[in-house]
Amino acid sequence: MKNKQLAPGMHDKLFKRAQSVYQIEMRVSNFLMASGFNRIDTPMIEYAGVFEDELDNHNYHLFDKHGDLLVIRPDVTQSIARVVATTKVTLPIKFSYSGKVFRNHDELKGLQNERMQAGIEIIGFDAAVAITEALDLAKSSLHLAGVKDYRIELSHAGILQTIFAAFDEAQVELLATRIKNKSITGLTEFVKQNPSEFDDFLINLPRLFGAAEDVLKSAKKWVKNPEILAALAEIENLSHDFAQSTVDLGMLAKKDYYTGVMFRVFSDKVPYAFLSGGRYDKLFERFDAGAVSAVGWALDVDAVYEEIRQDIVFGGGDA
Image 1 (tube, helix red, strand yellow):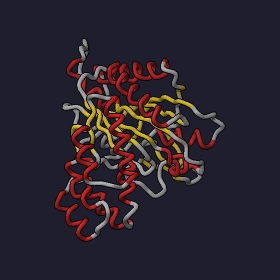
Image 2 (cartoon, rainbow, N blue to C red):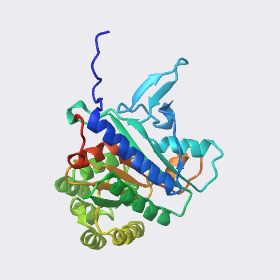
Image 3 (cartoon, one colour):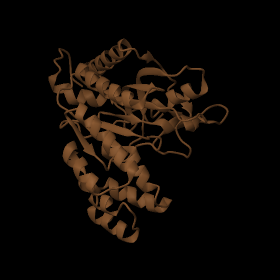
């Protein structure tokens, strides 16, 4: 056997890191269960169809003895949706979980491919109430985990979904890339070649991030579409409840099943979101079930450790 070292993107956790990650996971998990959430543990290996319709090279794949394609879970939310859609779980229901997820990142990015998550899913409840509850629980969980300074960034999947519906598949792919890159020049060129009712909004979209009050005030000047205005109102209502929130109207949904408010949590120490979530009513359609109102979030426990590691006093070695 030639390869006896760690596979790319994998890491051993020792001493301070191992103990701290475990303690963060347990504190958050116990808090969520005490808050009335039913603990759920789903398999680490599932059929590929639970997570993907086409082969996703970012997932870890293997075959079972029958030749069926399997995936080592990259996400827990979709596993929970499978449970709800294929069993006799009575709705509404609240779930909490923690466990490992696996995602194959570009080696040059230096990201870990194995990460510990803890999270919640609020399924079948009024969406507006569920979003507020989810964000309140996120704040409490971050406090328990020891995170002191952070900001909540809000957006809404319906904004870009409404815009994308006006274009064909090739146009959407190009538009999404330019939105992701916040390319003012690229978006200006796009609207010249593909005029629509969203021209002013798209040209200004790269600037529509920052303080909620300022961003939402500007956005309302550049759009008249009632669906987008309703989404902006939803974000505005939430921003009043969460004082440290910002807004990024160009936030692209990670998954196409997101349908409403989306949120991410950032700090100055970690270069990526260490908590993310939102409303995802369309996910259950993947399992041939009807649309169900659902809100959830996942906390990246390993990222939280990076955020607070300098504050942790540990008597043993460090790793």
